[in-house]
Length: 255
Image (cartoon, rainbow, N blue to C red; front, top):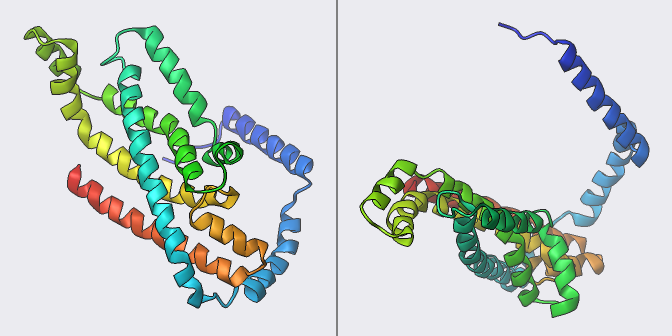
C-alpha cells in the first residue's frame, strides 16, 4: 500500500523548505553557485594535488605510527574512565537518581564538544605534539563512550540481577557476576567502534597541532606541497578502511 501525503506531512515538508531557504539566503549559498565553483575546484585538485607524490610515503610512516599510538593510548584511558562512569549512569547498577543525573549531565557536556575543539584548547596549555592529542582524544571520547557503556548496561537482564541479589550477594557482587558478564560483548563492540573513530579523529586533530599524520599534512599544505599532502590523505583513507574491515571481522567473531 502506497502511503499518501497528509496535511501534517505537507506542513513538515513546507517548514523544512522554508528553513533551508532561510539558511541558504543567510549563507548566500545556491546550488548554481556550487556548480559554478565546482570546475575550478576540480581543476585545482587535478593540477596541484595530482599526480600524488607516492615517493613521499616514507616521510609519513612515523607520523602515521604516532597517529595509531595516540588513538590506542587515548582509547585505553577513556575506556577505563568511561566504564566507571557508565556504571554510575545505569539504573541497573546505580540506585541513586541524583548520582545518575549528575554523571549523565557531565558526560553530555563532554559529548557535545568536538574533539578538535578540545585540541584547540589544549594546544596552548600543553604545547604542540602527541601529548596534546592523547589528552584531547581522551577527554573528547569520555562523553560518547560513557553513553555507549551505560546503555549497554541498561540492556542486561534485570531478573538475573534480582535472582543473584536474592541469594545474598552484595551489590558489588551482583554487578561483578551478573551485570558485567552480560555487558562484556557490548563493551567490546563499542570499544572497537571507538577505536575506528579515534584513528580518524587523531588524524583530524593533528591539523591543529595535536601531533600525528594530521600535523604533517597541515605542514605540507602550508608549504603548498599539495601533492605530498595528498599522499597523507590517501594513507588516512586507506588506514580507516582497513581498520573498519578488521573491526567488523572482530565484532562478528566476538559477538
